[in-house]
Amino acid sequence: MVDYALFLGCNIPNRLPHLELAARKVLPKLDVNLVDIKEFGCCPEPIGIQELSQDAWMAMAAINLCLAEEKGLDIVALCNGCFETLRTVNTELQHNDGHKTKVNAALSKIGKEYKGTQKVKHVLEVLYNDVGLEKIKASVQKELKGIRVAVHYGCHVIRPSAILKIDDPFQPKSLDELVNALGAESIPYLRKMLCCGTGIEGIDKENQLWMVHDKVAQVERMNADCMTMLCPLCYIQYEMGQLQLKKEPYSAQFKIPVMYYPELLGLAIGMQPDELGFKLHRVKVDPVLQKIQ
Image 1 (tube, rainbow, N blue to C red):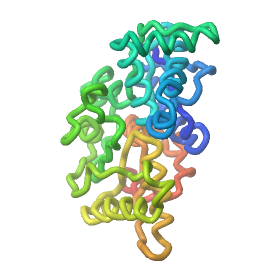
Image 2: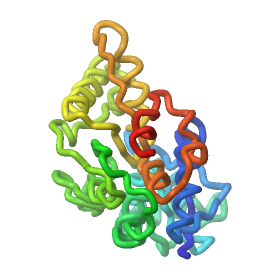
Image 3: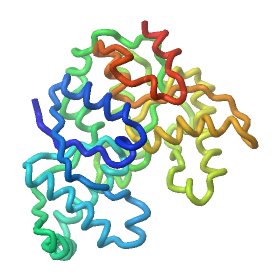
Image 4: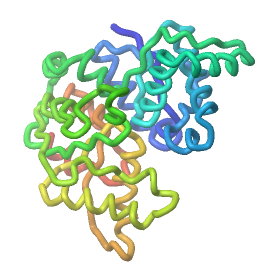
């Protein structure tokens, strides 16, 4: 059993508790022990705050890194944005003495010092690299045969690739292989690498929804049973977006279930649907569950 400091971020505990539930139920069954650090705060998100003050962004992230260092634990993040912020700041402070000095001057006011002793990992790389495909395959009790899955990576788990170093930023394969390891089929589709549009939601909601529309339309065209991803903000856009697209001027009637990968993993390793909080999904997953039974 390997211990990790669990970094939930803000959106999962506040808006998507079923994603947290799935991670907490499934990961320990694969010998990943999740340790809570109650003092963790916002990562903070990698776009807005950094534009206002990069120093504040790095200092806030460094507080979280210090908390993990004090416990001697590497961090596992369940959110792409949290992962990008924490990994980027950790890398920057490890290699830029000027930034490290400035950040530690700020941290000294609250009695903390960043040392750079711990790693930051995304749950994707913990599953793919640390647990590994073979162990996941060996844990499968109910193969998800016949389930066609459209994989969505999201931007902040693979870019900037020089820092994050998780997968090929143009043709990633790790999540596809994790899906296939469950006996399901990761399907090819157009617009696979299209952003969910979260970054422009606050300034251009109409075009952000067209981005969702373009992607989900391709997923539907390929007769996918569901979409899967490992980012809560992408999850929100593709689930809530389908409901919003029912209105004018879009008038779309999409019903593609959106599933966090640990939910699929939980089903494959023998967990019951009621254990995984599927009743909290806004786009019903019943067609997928019926196909698995």
